[in-house]
Length: 444
Image (cartoon, rainbow, N blue to C red; front, side, top):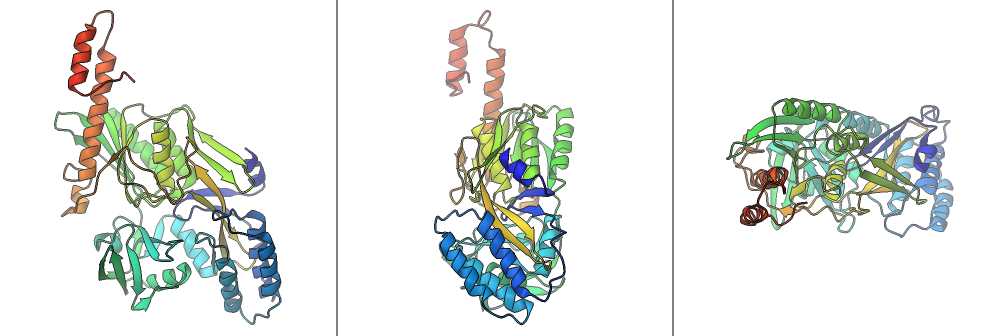
């Protein structure tokens, strides 16, 4: 609640993506720069000094104060020199998520979070330890997706320019470009190195898809896939659940695989569609202030649930899957998630440029800090190579879905057996015998 009070004076939109972001509409501050490039540098410095959450434990305010003296003592003849200085200054933080965006990049970021992208359809990040350029996840129905790009692939070069030592902003600039042009990526996957030539395109993200599946024993399964937690995801998920409820599904498979994140509030709302009560996520600021989000008692369904996750399930996806796991609302199936538990604040600077600065971290309901570690599924299953990914994902040709459906059927059967058991009329020994055969040893 204290965090809410601190933010009450500003219009806030929370996001939890691979760059979990809080947009502050500081329009009053976005004034014309008065011929002083140092003003932008100092604005960045002040924000970091006041709000930066150091996840590495290496940040020293005394060193940051010395850096201010150093950078403000120099002369800058144009904005590019000032922007380069800011990036050098921020490199001292040892935090790949705290980064500067020039006005063009900042505007593109705003477009990106609105659900429309321009490029090849990949989310990228710098690995903090190796400094490698890592693909968090390809976005479904994009050039990168169709080319077979995968989460955790390393980008070694872009159009034959090595990415060694390259910052994130420069990499983004090289990958993006005009629609219809090509970009060549050198990819490392394990020990294998290969090239992919991708055609840049306008990318529209459809956040949610759903369908009705039939299990082998005739049960109706509601399948809901969320590709990104954008502004429409909660409403689309709600509509999908309501529609599937009218079809009397026995349970749900919620697919969050390769979902890099999105709006934080969207992830909370979607969690509330399935979780009636209990903690969903808590956020800790640099000062130890804590805000807790809970279920609101308005869950749309209480039916059995399985969640599919993989290495590309990041941030907002981890909030939802962590909430479901810790509240024992359902089971997680797949591979360990990406591990991104830091929250950034996006600030508009005085000249229209922007800054994302790490200001908090989030914890799962059990207090687990998943940053860098990810969430381990209840049932670990590798993804098979699908010959026709679009048509076969979410079917029994999809190994992870097949395992998820099997676990969901087990949960449904256990629930039905327990609900039918009446100690006043049913033979207890017969009931225990049935459940022993089905490997069920608990009434919980």
